[in-house]
Image 1 (cartoon, rainbow, N blue to C red):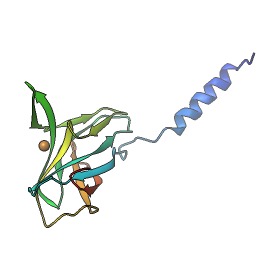
Image 2: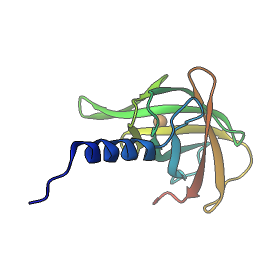
Image 3: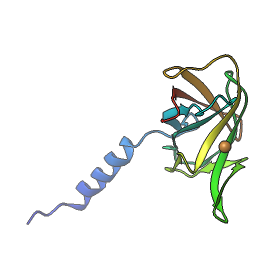
Image 4: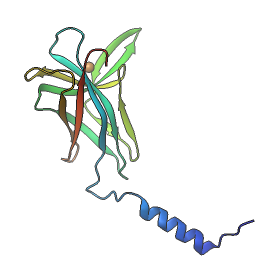
Length: 148
Ligand SMILES: [Cu+2]
């Protein structure tokens, strides 16, 4: 049976904590796997999906969304109310430390209205998420057809 001395355990703990990402004030969540779904018929509106991971050691709150490619952008949530699918605006989205928000069809999503110019599948759209306190997160979203 292996016996590990207390100092060795302490050193291992210190080494592990040193390996954690430094989440000082320059730590920011990341936007991954972003994509936009074109509507099945021509409508001035796209839904956006992806993941926003907060690998920092403090919570952050997203208070707004913007993109130069759209006249209007916001966070929405789809919910089934009395058997009917309804959307509502999400004015603030908090990500706890180590937490992740998943934007997926049928749930939380980006609502992008009034596209500036034509968008085609394969295009990449940059979206900015405004953070409480003044920071901005940038994410890339790939445009896909109505089938996703
Ligand atoms: Cu919506």
